[in-house]
Image 1 (cartoon, rainbow, N blue to C red):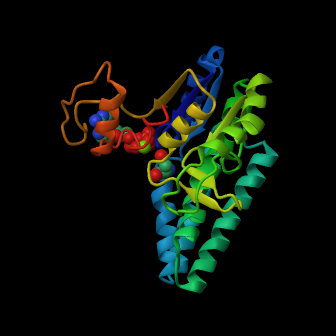
Image 2: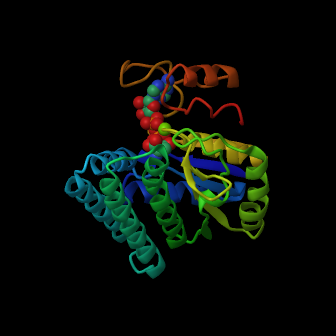
Image 3: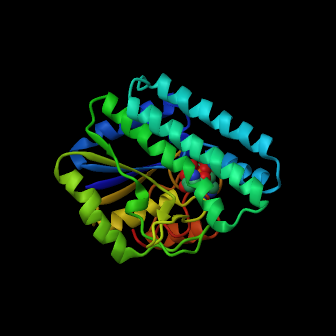
Length: 273
Ligand code: ADP
Ligand code: ASP
Ligand code: MG
């Protein structure tokens, strides 16, 4: 079994999601578990929703909610899964929940780390069912799994710490039975929940970390991180355009690159791997 994580640009629009679905289908023989980020840029927009709401700028916040709603519904239509009644109604319900959250924050005039997480988690909550539907559409027996039922964390909102023993138990009850039944579980990265079921996040870029935590919990053969570059490079290509691809890298070197700010991997990703 392998864990395949797809970053925001890999699920940025319908074309990217369809390509991601093809990549997963090509790996069926290795029994993939899929971890997805939010559609590119979504988490930044969600954080703006929380901050505008908390400043009382509810109209601006709600206009971003509608922009994201349109974008997600367009992706659903363009993927040809618009006739999936449950997907469309669940997506609509999540946007209604998001609008209610924005209203609540504007009434309070404040966004606590806990409520920021409730808002920021929406990106992955929205993306995972869409990716699962895109997989089903091309014949992959995918099942959406709410990552909050698996990724047990502390209540350190905004930078929650994983609780590996609970994650392993949840994998045994929620994820591995699907794998054994020949299905492809699809989970959102980045998000988790406290023991009381309150939504948390692992910190920005945390989907990589989710993938490695799940890989460790299920003793996966490999954890694949699919993104918009060919691999780890000698430098950030946005700063150094002729940065070179590193063919092989030791775990400790990769961890060092990540912790010194190479955005390609969340700094905590290597340890579980
Ligand atoms: P994703 O949304 O897939 O997680 P990220 O934007 O978080 O993608 O990470 C990929 C980006 O990391 C690349 O587009 C690249 O600009 C940047 N990056 C920074 N340092 C490095 C590096 N040393 N090697 C590769 N990519 C890097
Ligand atoms: N969507 C989250 C973020 O933008 C997590 C991730 O993409 O890894 O930070
Ligand atoms: Mg990232």
